Amino acid sequence: MFYRFLASEQQKAYIEMQERRIAEKDAAIADLKKLVDELQSLKANLLETLAEFRRQFFGVASEKTGEPKPPAGPGEDSAKTMVKAHSRVSRKPKAARAEQYAALPVREIRIPLTREERRCPYCNGEMENVSYVKVREELRITPAKVERIRYLQETAVCPECRKDGDGTFAKASAPMALMPHSPASASAVAYVMFQRVFLGLPYYRQESLVAQLGLTLPRETMANWCIYCAEHYLLPLYEKLHSLLLKRDVLHADETTCQVLHEKGRTAESTSYMWIFLTGSDGLAPIVLYDYQPSRKGACARDFLEGFHGLLQCDGYQGYNKVEDVVLVCCPAHCRRKFFEAVPAQRRKNIKLLDILSEEAIPEPRLPKEGEVPTWIPAEVGLSYCNRLFYLERGFRDLPAQERALKRRELEVPIWEGFFQWAETVNAAGGSKLAKAVKYALNHRDTLNNYLLDGRCEISNNAAERRAKSYAIGRKAFLFHASEAGARASAVMYSIVETAKANGLNVFQYLYMVLLYMPDYQNESAGMEQLLPWSDFIKKHCSGLIDIESITAEAHEPLPV
Image (cartoon, rainbow, N blue to C red; front, side, top):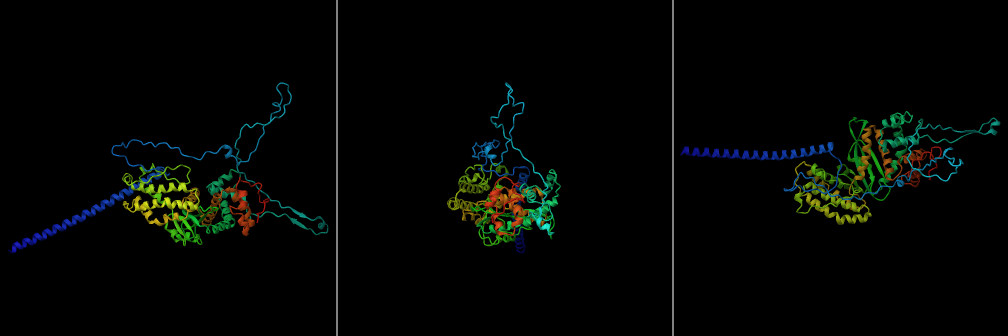
């Protein structure tokens, strides 16, 4: 009996041991399955990242528009090339030559007959002129030239007083120098600024350029000219534009990186930022301002926009949450771009994203029906919702603000509701681009819809991104700023140039006029008003061609103050 009891106890212990082993094996198998799933997800993400890097290095970087294509069916030949039907696109008609040259001055060159040609071949008499016949037209460009302007101040004496041994003298009033003890003139500095900002030519290239004109002008001198004039003459105008910008109701904001080599307390490799702020589509004169800051902290935007209380259109960067008493309007174009990037590269070739201002016609996107969803990958579904919104916006862009707001509530609100309902059902692999796109959309659900609050808001923040690109083009050439003063001067110069462009001015002429008049009017508020880019005086003198010959330092009309 004892041995039988012992045997049963051993069997029980053995069974328990086997059950523990089975449980441990099951747990190990579950862990391995979880690890396999994680590794597969990691592999998919790495392949996705690798494909994106390959596209950036070797592929086409542009974004195309079109409908996502369903994958090939079981009976279809995947090797066949699908040719899209040709569709005529309504393009802006080309301007006629007369229209292209309408603003150019005309110089007629009359070609007379020679003495021999004027003799009649029959009677040898001298022929008389009948008319001149147009043979052809050509364009003639005169390169820039550098002159030394030597001001000679007249001095006069009274001859009657001189007879009595007492000379009474008078001297002519000479124009004020732009910079003390410097040969810099308004035209010379405007030329350097224009080449640096508008054309993106760094100082060392300009140094080589002016050498071809016979002038030795070191790059350090050009930099000092721009820094001094930006601080003394452009900055007061910049501050005036800043105060006017804060009074608007709708603004755009963005930021891009830059580098400053010599800045106190920071290494040369440190990343700094150029912030961009501009007015929206409110029907008033546009203002574009750049602001250099050593960091990307939200406090930078908060301090610059102190006093602004309206709608701020921006991307999803959390730093903009620091701006107080504003309504953030997150950019749906960023949301759309993330779904576009989540589409595999091979399928992405048939898709393109166009701005609503593009001249190219956009085919009407369709939303997937319930039965069609399985034939589309999730990223294409999300992209279709976004494309539908942008297609509608293209039709609304010329409407008055109030009417556009009503159309948006009627037609776009249901699309957003369907989009977010779909997004909540997506089960994407963790860390994938699709997961990031869905997370971005859901995290910014409220701010993505805020453009619906006001018809003056745009559906995208592309206006700010275009101004960031203007700076990035120049940065690609000059690479870095040597000093903090140079970075701040660049911010001021880019602000004046981009604001002039936005107001349809001749940029060089506007820089020239500001530098010409500011030495005399920088402390007069009325004079400052006349130098704003939308004043009647500036429109009159800066809307046409460059003119520095009839408007000079020694002979120019005073401001109408």
